[in-house]
Image 1 (tube, rainbow, N blue to C red):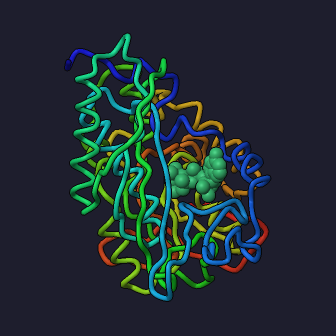
Image 2: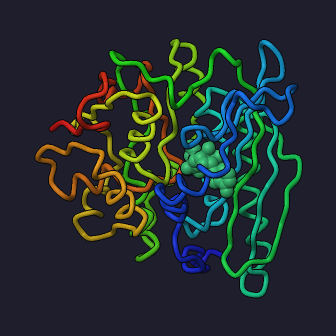
Amino acid sequence: MTTLRLTQYAGGGGCACKIPPGELDDLVAALACPLSQPVDPAAELLVGLEGGGDDAAVVRLDAERALVTTADFFTPVVDDPYDWGRIAAANALSDVYAMGGTPWAAVNLLAWPRETLPMDVAAEVLRGGRDVAHAAGCQVSGGHSVTDPEPKYGMSVVGIVHPDRMLRLDAAEPGRALTLTKPLGSGVLNARHKATGTVFPEAVAAMAALNGDASRAAVAAGIRAGTDVTGFGLLGHAYKLARASGVTVAIDASAVPFLADARRAVADGFVSGGTRRNLAWVEPHVDFGAAPEAERLLLADAQTSGGLLLAGEVPGHPVIGEVLPRGAAPVVVRA
Ligand SMILES: Nc1ncnc2c1ncn2[C@@H]1O[C@H](COP(=O)(O)OP(=O)(O)OP(=O)(O)O)[C@@H](O)[C@H]1O
Ligand SMILES: [Mg+2]
């Protein structure tokens, strides 16, 4: 089982296989339903697709509780099936945390090439997902499985959030510090892993880590705006936050934490197509100053199961910039 290279069964890997941000914007814009026109008056939509959507949809249950719903699945990001399962589950649960919510129950989403990959490898993937969901206090109550030439795994997750204590994309206020709760670089290290088989344990640990503690700390600190940094990279998600909130997000490049070996991976050319598409999409909205190409690519690197980007300070996590009134560019990178 350990000699199987799961990443070789997929074109892209992890969150780098997402549909590019500009194309996704266009796709979902047509679906958006104004919050003022609920499909059912009983189901008050607090967060939907308006303005390009948020990390998850939120529907009110009552004055103190709202339902958070999200789904995420992707191709193998690492060769080890148990680790892939853990990473995919942490990533799926993350969108509930990115709304300030608590995951409640999840169902598995599995696509498997049963002709070419043994089912006991799939069982390892699911075991990894279950273990991480249980660590989050979340039930895995079922799922859905289909055959597919490319393996894919993830979860649909339901969570609960207090309607007045959400972490929204459109609530960032000027004057707030900007915090990032996981180091960047998983995209370039995953690209190197896919190409060479080299395992980066620090990257695996970061991707499999839950964003639960950071989310609870942020909500407790009074923070009400944030998102998770995934396939569109730090710059892409910072731009979405700036766009939705009508602010400028300033990033101090020297304060941004990186996984060990990430800079070397970029220098050695391990950059995914997703990262290059991210940079091309976000470039017109970013004032890069004198930042060199390698720095731009690192800041746009397509993350898998990245950390939370929060408009406010969270003890124990680095401040990487600040929220400013909207200036000439929605995102500014400072040296
Ligand atoms: N096929 C789709 N139909 C309807 N809405 C979609 C579809 N795909 C994406 N969306 C919506 O588009 C918005 C952005 O999606 P995206 O997947 O980038 O967010 P995300 O779930 O936070 O990403 P990540 O899981 O990488 O953190 C979300 O509001 C999401 O619900
Ligand atoms: Mg998200």
